[in-house]
View 1: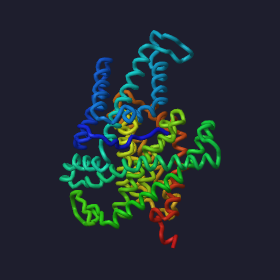
View 2: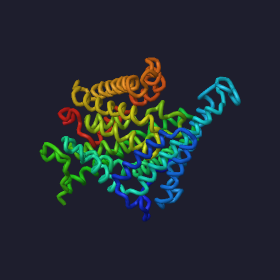
View 3: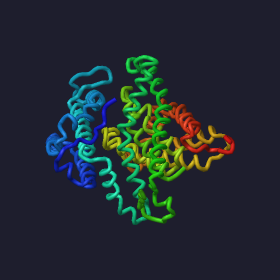
View 4: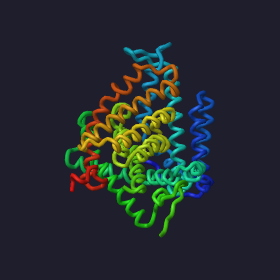
Length: 243
Length: 180
């Protein structure tokens, strides 16, 4: 399993920028990257992302970790597009598969776009602490509070999700190791046996995850955390932390 | 179940929406065939209600796309609508379907959610995301043929997981009077 980026300690303009601005910036940049189609546009987009990585001071290794984890998937995307996208002027043909320049270009476009969006997402989590992310989501959603929607619940959910990903990844690795000790190496088996092994992991993974959720919610409520609707308030998403 | 616990369960299930596809990543084309992201959304709706299910359905694909690049950006909007429907309908059916048998309740809710999500996905693709280019055959193939393994996996896994959570005392039992 590939890693998910976490916060990287550094002092940079990106670290100091407000989380809400970074979230908006991420969405805008991701849309621009997806809209880029010509080689010149993609090179400009890649240069922009590289500049952001440089400014962030998180290091190229940390910025590229999630993208590196996708290498086999991206290679497969490139190969499928190169072989199946078109059958006009093939460079090489084998049965229904035709290697074409057009297919290669399409595959490369998708791979570059995906890589750039992944690096942008990595930069957000590497330069923003989870609690800052929660505050950013809360401030971005605050206009919805005027409509009576609970923005607090959404902000809480985003924060808990981001914080739980590394924990659940660790636990799933431990469960996989435990299964390997009992039944041998899962990854070395055929697809069917590997699939059955993964299914057997699902029940303990869910029980463990919901147990953690139960413990966290009990701890939060014991410290006086209440959502507005629990206190009988009609609107808004205001939180009260009494302790 | 308190509001805070419902939201935290929704968030933890959304985190599993990010973690599970990584576990399935070593199986070729696992995303389209095994549908690993659907399972936490359904479970969230079944154990924590329609709002929690909907929250998981939105957060799962959006945060997974931002953090891991999967699903790819063009797929995020249709997938989010589909998963939101799964979580919402699973929660609503789980709330209102009361046959007196936990397993029957859960299977009715699960199958209803699976059908509703696929119908919403097909309608949205035909009208909004791929207007004019999405056919009934493509919808049937993507919803029931390519994902047949995923459907079987969901039918085999979701209900036992929810029952296990009830037995472990982590979520309130549907029929406490029977357990007493």
